[in-house]
Length: 266
Image 1: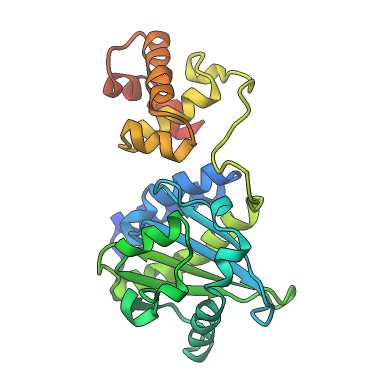
Image 2: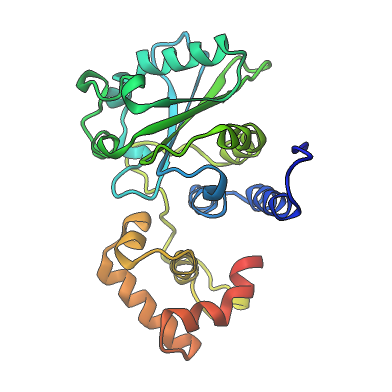
């Protein structure tokens, strides 16, 4: 791992923490949590689309990672993604022509405002609010299936430091993604079996309750947690009531404070 010598100790420490947390990613929900955490400090975004193929094929395999309501891999079916095939190939060609380095575009310049390129789903609707893109890729010389990463932001916040961060972090992003099984149509991105065993080091909380509390710790609201986990807001409130009772606390802040060491290191 090589980072610029101009980085401060604080930035280096944050980079190492991000890398360490990325190495621990094993599930799609882990990947989402990681991308919504400190990664946002360097790569601020709402949506990440990963597409991998030999880029000469008709269709791409893909994964869509976002905390926005309904913006899920399983909702972007091959028919929707085909509307992006020409654009993805164009972005891939630009990346190759530029020497396979990260580059940025405004949404208007990329052509995403053209309705012919917009899928008819929640992802397509979310693109109305996006203003800039950051693109980079990984070449797989052995498998001949390169992976292109496109991240979308609602702000014009991609600058030279963001491009450098994309260069630094993409190998770890790619490694994390490769550990996660691609989700197909009809799968829940963050779903967990209801009968998972309890985790003793988190004071008797179930895995789902730990997951809810993780999102609380990251500052997400009940509606946001409900959208991320694919459950109702009422169910989130119900989980929180159980969490408060088990931890003998009265609010979210107390709950997070009581188990934060376990959530951070367990």
